[in-house]
Image (cartoon, rainbow, N blue to C red; front, top):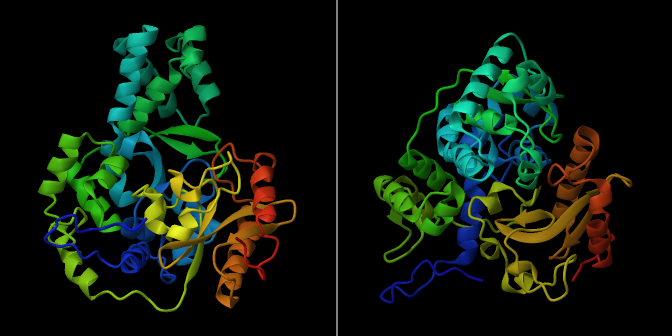
Length: 412
């Protein structure tokens, strides 16, 4: 599906979709490696990286700046970057300069969870606030501590919520308190082994300010993702329509062209006008939740129509790739266009690729580079915390069956 940034009938000519894709790729630092950039610099320039206990942050930072796992883990340990509940209450990897804004952007989520627990489970705010104070006292004596140790240390301050709570995903009141404390910058979640792709955490005391308005998030977002629409920004932010419209108006954005729904910062408008899409391909292998997709969550904008019509390699019959909200596998990008799907097979220590274009030397080199990174530094390329070689096996088999057995053959 091609977007028409000119819905105004007085300006019917659409902007070249290949230019739009290439520009998004350029702004996401996917048109060439920015070797030497730190993890914080990459995230500040290209946007917060969604983190769900998988390999996405590592893959994104490797693709953009050639950063290895050790460099990223060291940046996490030094608090140059950190996983925080941010936009929509979802966990992202943020640079230190954005910690305050990220926490402010996600503050409504734990408050909403507490309100739901008050309504459905009879949990009082005073009860949870007292638990928060007890947790802070425990963590002040040392940490990080895992949830079991915290629960034992605070004793009766934690209350089981019984079967009704388990049905709502809350066995006790502890997650409510930890969520509030994280959103307030009073505690932070620390990966037990220092890795972002394994979901075992402890909690440590913190004193991080929380500050930032909706307009601040809008300015950040459109510098990463513009041109983007109000609908795209609402998806990312989780704001109401009224809040999003007000933030966009205050941010001083300009339309991509007269009458366009696509907006971008004025300082980027001239740069976009002068931008020319590269003629040579540049392939990058990324996670399915990389920012090139997830900042907009508008998958068809990255697909050629023929690729959008492709049947899913795994899933119910009749479903097409372009009809999905999110990809089910990792992605291969070239100048902003999705040109293939991939998964990592840890048993064979290899990437299984389903290309949408005839593989050339540049694509083979990109696959080999990423394959070596995953094999030697990550060990696997999980999509999310519960992803495993066993659960991934059907997807890998489906990619192979679709014609991805070798890089020398074209699939589809």
